[in-house]
Length: 282
Image (cartoon, rainbow, N blue to C red; front, side):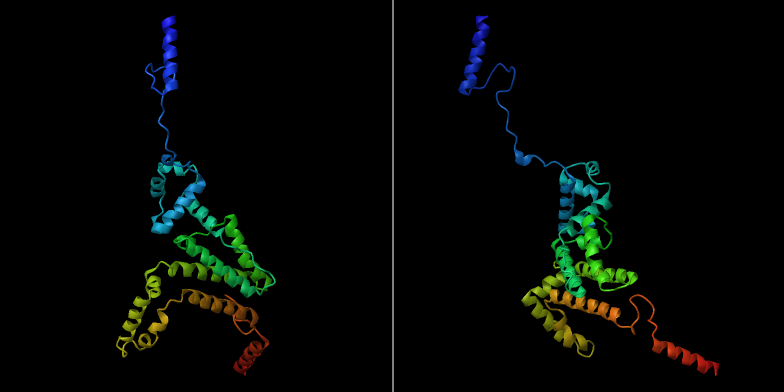
């Protein structure tokens, strides 16, 4: 009994002095501290979506696969399906998350044309802040809460301006298709955009156009240096102005064909039609 007590006393003494225990009883004397930096964060839907956005920004929309995403996250592919049903739902979730960044609030007292232009500029800015997302938006029609809020913001000024139901729907898609298409076809990271932003390369490019055979390329010789310029913002704004001005003219002019419809019938065209019919009958 005394011997047992003395062993316990010696073990306590070692523990107090910092010496390792030799009896191996009850608990380990030393546990290696876990390095928190090596621990992978708990997998959540938000983390899955964020990593998907990173894949698209780095390698493009076509690079996003469930298997590749799982490998990046350090999990088996099946683990992803606890958070998203399939790749299509994942795309819709990341689209809705990106569109949530678009400020869709406008001043209803401002002209409807100004409201639409402001929304288009905001949408383009957000899409270009997330490279590759516009390409997915061209193939998907997300119906999440933020996607719907943005659609409502575009449609409300058209409705208030007096567009017919079908006309408003066509005008909505004209605006969205132009904005998304601009972000897809002319991204800031494209070779052409990088080339025209570089002053030295741009100068060489203009010299190349001026050196072309003028008998074969007269327009390029004269206008090439005015086409390949660093004017991305100006190009988008000019196109948007033309588009919105066209919508305004289609809404106001009774002599122009209705948006997406047949020519509007007026008293003058009716009289011409009647006169023609009488001439044929005579």
